[in-house]
Image (cartoon, rainbow, N blue to C red; front, top):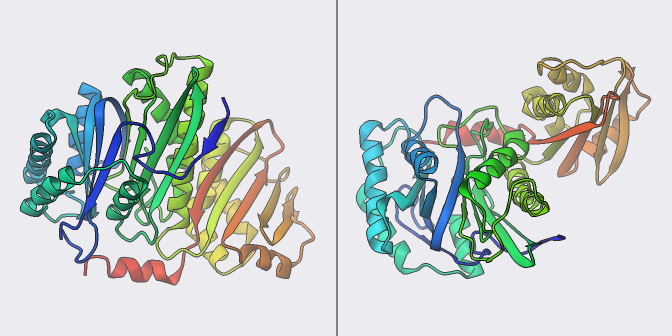
Length: 409
């Protein structure tokens, strides 16, 4: 059951189509709406923001995923978040779904909606409906269609984010592909900002939901760009069974293989979000190894990448390991700072920075060179057990303030 990464996105799996258009919702002269459509009925699963303030599409999608558990289409717009928009915002979700259902020949309850952008503005529903009609007429399964959809959902992102893998399950080739957007307001406690994953695996909705929850916790929930949990965070996963494998059973080797493939796509997308954080110049990976418990390792790693002081130190190429210990110390988990090691590593090399309660004998110049690379890893060895976890973030730069000071203008 070897897994292979392939060049692809949301159309990589059999039976999935995508499209993108310029609807003029907020941006001019660029793609700003996307659609994903399955030619077959799909099991649908998802995770959503833990923020008490939830956008209208989050409420719409959560009801469909939790009560119906199936869907065939997703409509996404960029520029306006449809958050804090009251009953009118919910009504616009219903209008979007009705328009898409009519255009695609499916039921309204089979259409999921997602929005990203400025909070508090109402959607220009006429432009949205016109965009949906255009999208439905230009759907395709090409690599270009997937790439265009990934570009269309971007806001402050600087690059589109896609991933796809294939794995053999029950003698059949199963594909998992996806796209996401996210650059700022990223500190998920459920999944990501917006992420859409498609697969042609045959799997029940209940088992798909279980796999999605576990994968989100290990991937998207381990990302922090700026400590802000969005009102719109949504991960949607559709499985249409077009690979024609025997339905995956819980506890089987096939289920483990599917989970590995799902994790691979989600981890790639999560890291791409962290690397493309607003104004970022460096991807920070925090690894906690030899921990006593998995939850302990995860909490400590996430705390490191969430620290504004750690982020600022990496931006300045400053090996300020005290900030890392500080972030670990308030993570809510116990460990022995007098019996642990800290390492910095990148393509420039690696350096032991801290050992057993005090600074190690390292060169500040060497450490600065390591931290100056585009991807930096901080490894904390707790020397307690065999568990480990990874988390991802980015440095905090002057441009982050500039981007967010001007976001609504």
